Amino acid sequence: MQKRLKSIGVFLVVAIFAAASLAGAEDADQALKKLMEGNDRYVGGSCMQRDLSDARRNELAKGQKPSAIVVTCSDSRVSPELLFDQSIGDVFVVRTAGNVVDKIALGSIEYAVEHLHAPLVYVLGHEKCGAVKATLDTIEAKGKPEGNIGAILEKIMPAAVAANVKGGSKDEIVENAIKENVKNTSNEIMAKSSIMQHLVHENKVKIAGGEYSLQTGKVEAIELAAEKVHHGGNGKKGH
Ligand SMILES: [Zn+2]
Image (tube, rainbow, N blue to C red):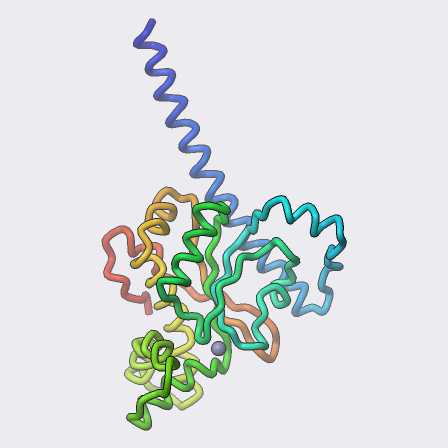
């Protein structure tokens, strides 16, 4: 009898664990769908009516449950709440020039996945990113950036170098560096956060990425290799 109870217990634990993992994956897919549908509304000029009432604020004051974490550039034209047509309480946002991550940004992401249970991390780069351009300019001029900007360019440098190696016109190189930089940021999030590795491995969190077009407003998906990092990959990008 005891043995049977024990096996039922094990079964329940496994079942609950599997259900939780599945729920996490579904939540992440839902969260991604929510962002993309919001972007479609934004592009189509049919943004939702935001509930910014006292009642909504009071409700959110009790606690937040954002459905996604968006890691994006500080650029004034790339406001994630607007371009994904989301409202207050919907997205947990980490913004740095060039959408790069340091320890503080990683800690912010970890807080949101672990304590707020956000199931999706979305890394969003954008067309004509000034930080990426500045990095390419620095390589060209063989110069050194002033002040703390150097810390940002250092993070973008591997993407800029890779884009230069790939070659093409100046615009193509900028564009490739922007895409590469999104991949690198997602790789770094996975490589430097054991909390993210753990949650992605358990299928509770997904990581996705894209690029925002300043002109059309559209977010186009970028294929990431980031999820493979925890399986022993070397963080190298797909293509
Ligand atoms: Zn930018």
